[in-house]
Image 1 (cartoon, helix red, strand yellow):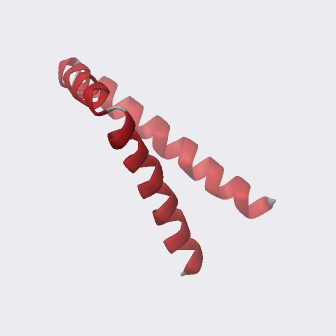
Image 2 (cartoon, rainbow, N blue to C red):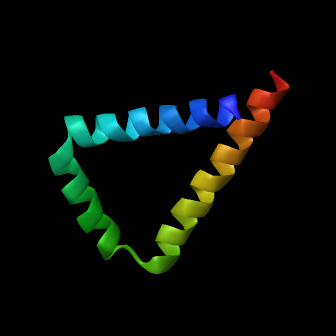
Length: 62
C-alpha cells in the first residue's frame, strides 16, 4: 500500500508541475489532441500503457 501511495504522489507532483509551470502549453496540447484522429490518440494511450507496465515490471526486477 505504501508503494501505491508513493507512486500516486509522484504522479500528482509531476502533473502539478506541468500545470503550474506551463498552463498555456496545456491549452495548446488539448487543441492538438482534439484535432488528432481517435486511432492516433488510442495508439498514444496504448504506448503509454505499455511503457508504464514495462517500467513497473523493470522496477520489480531491480
